[in-house]
Length: 247
Image 1 (spheres, rainbow, N blue to C red):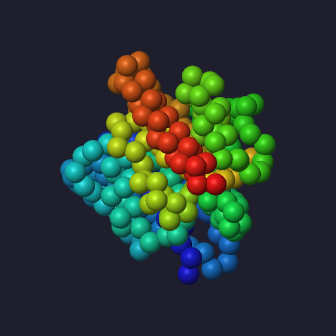
Image 2: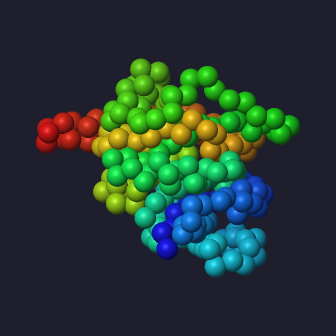
Image 3: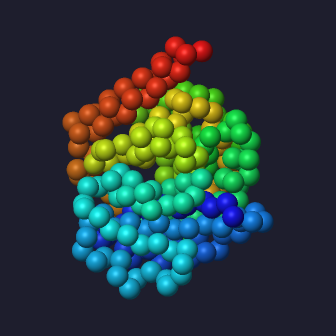
């Protein structure tokens, strides 16, 4: 039976939202023969996940030495079995049909990864979309990278929606060893290496709340942000140049 592995890192502030994330996953309808597994990984070894997850064989909690979200994702990956790997942050929600649309797009062997439309989920329960999303369809190699470079390191897609073939994820070295933006680093590396696909139907609700990491002072420190962006850029450009050199 083919498996799509959904990977979710967790730290204490995001724990209250985990039940909603699970509900959005449990409601997914997959193509015939497919199933999902949920790798929930504490960033640390405090017992944060003890007795908070459903007792279900497809829900696989884990813990490990604290190292940030990239490390937590990689430790979760080590426990996964799926040929497709889907990102889901603990405070976000999958939209109905999200996994089925990813699987359908990846039936094309020329497509190695997907991303999708996102709606911001505001504290009052309303949602807000964006008017800058790409059109439905294939994403050329390097297209996201070039947009990101031209727009002050702002991506044309949301990295947290990535679904990627396991082989490519491992070939790229997984999520970057950064204190933040590790998912941006991965999606730009994927875009530099192969063609992807943008699903124009909403696949994720991105929760906006005061405690989210992207609002923290550390995340928005200008010097650290520039360091992260430069390393992400160099990695993606190196991959892109290497592939061009082999064609």
